[in-house]
Image (tube, rainbow, N blue to C red; front, side, top):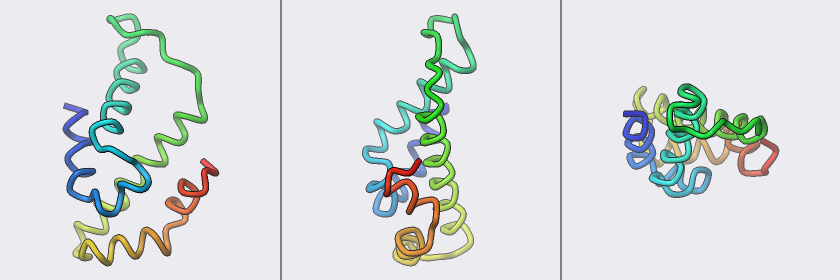
Length: 100
């Protein structure tokens, strides 16, 4: 479920997000695997890493995904969403610069 819940919006907004997220399948797989490790430790999942920088980066990337979905849902065209994210989003700027 989580895999599809993450992958579908990424595919829908790939033109905007691909530079930040990369392959929708790879990103959604990473998020899904990490979520399973954190919520079901010991149930066939390895012990989750304590890599908090990675967790923060994935959290910010997921927040960017939500930001893009929200802009789309309130009526902005895909071109306008891309312009907003590339030129005005502080989150995308931090992710692009590698500060997160």
